[in-house]
Image 1 (cartoon, rainbow, N blue to C red):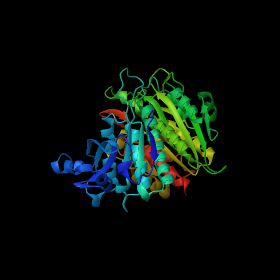
Image 2 (cartoon, rainbow, N blue to C red):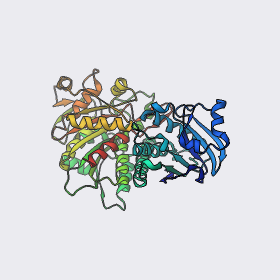
Image 3 (cartoon, rainbow, N blue to C red):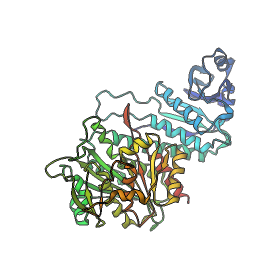
Image 4 (cartoon, rainbow, N blue to C red):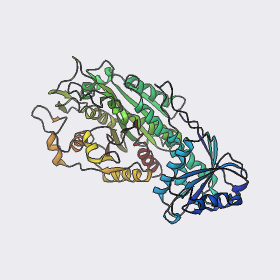
Length: 494
C-alpha cells in the first residue's frame, strides 16, 4: 500500500519556497501567475516559445532547477477559460503518469491558479490526492519482480489564499482515504482465487475492526446460515470444498440507534459456472466475481479513515461456485431465507442466489437504505460497456442520490428500468420464481429477481460487471468505491 503523504501549506512567495520539484500550471501558451513568479531569466517562457511544450491538458515538461526549486515541472491545463472538472482530471492523470516515470521523492504543487467559479478548491485538492494515491498502486503479492514503487513520498500542496489551510488539509485527507479504499478494492480483486477465498475475505473484514471501537465484525458460518434458512446462498457453495461465509461489518460513526446505510456485496471468489460450466476462454477473470464484496470493504475502509458521522453496515455473501457431485443441478428447487422457492435453471446465475438471502438478512438492521453491489450479468456489459455501472432502484430519491454521487466522483452510473413487464420472464411452473428470465434483458431480469427480496426498504442494485475490471490490461478498477463513498458523504451531511 502507498506511503505517499499529502500536506497543505500556503506559500506567499513560491519563488522562495524550497522544494525538490515545483509543479506549476501552464494554460496553453500562457504561464500561470505562479509559473511567472518562478520564470527566472525567462527559462519557462522560453520553453513555450521553442514549442517544446504546448500546455495541453495532461502534458508535462520537467526542467532543471530554478531558484529554490531543484526542478520545475510544467503541467498543461489547456485553455484557461475552458478549465473544468474534466480538464482537471485529465491534467492530474498526466501529472501522475509523469511522477510515476520520475525519481522525484518530494514535490510542491501550486493549485491557486487552478481555482475558479467552475472548479472548487476542496474538490480539486481531493482529486489531486485521490488520483496520485490510486496511481501509486502496484500489484506485488504473487510476482517475484514487481514494478518499481512510486518514488514520490511527500506532496506538499500550496492552495494559495483561496482555501483555508484546515479545509485544504481535510480535502487532501479525504482524497487520500478514498484512493486507499479504491486501491484496497483493486488488491482484493486482483488476488487469485486460491488466495482470496471466502475465508480470506472474512479475515480481511476482521482486520477492519481491530483496534477500532466503532467497528464490529461478525462472520456467520454455514451451520448458522442453515439455521437461518439460507438455502439459496448455500446452494451455491454446495459444490465447493470452500465453506461459504456471511460477513457482517458494522461501522457506528453516527448517533446510537440511527438507521444504518447498508451495503451488500456479492462475494463469489471464483465462478466456474457450477454444473452450467462456463467456456474456458477468460474463465480466469472469474476471480473478479467478488468485486462487489471488495467494493464494500474498500468503501468501509474509506468511511472509517474519513470518520464519517453516520452508521454503515456491510454485508458480504461470500462463496465459491464449483462443480462436483454435491453441486446444485439445473432444475433443482431451493428455498430462500424469505421462504420464497427458486427454480435454479442455470447454476451460472449464482450471484442473485447468494444476494437474495443477504438482502433478506439486511432487513434485521432496519436500514435507512440498502445498496447491493455485484458483478452480476454479462448482459450489463453488452448494454453499457465499461463506462457506467447499471443502477436499478425501487426508490427514485435513492437512485438520484447515487447517480449524482457517481457524476461528482466521475464513477458514473446509468439508471435502468425495473418494470413488472420484465418480472413475468421469471415465472416458473415448479417454484415461486426462476433464477433466470431468458436471453432478453438479462441485466434487467436479474435486478427484478433481487427486487423481490428488497420490498421492505429503499433499495438500489448496482450491476458492475462492466465497470469493476479491465480485460486489457487485466486488473480490477476499484469501482464503484468512489460513487459509494461520495453517496455516504452526502448522507453524513443530510
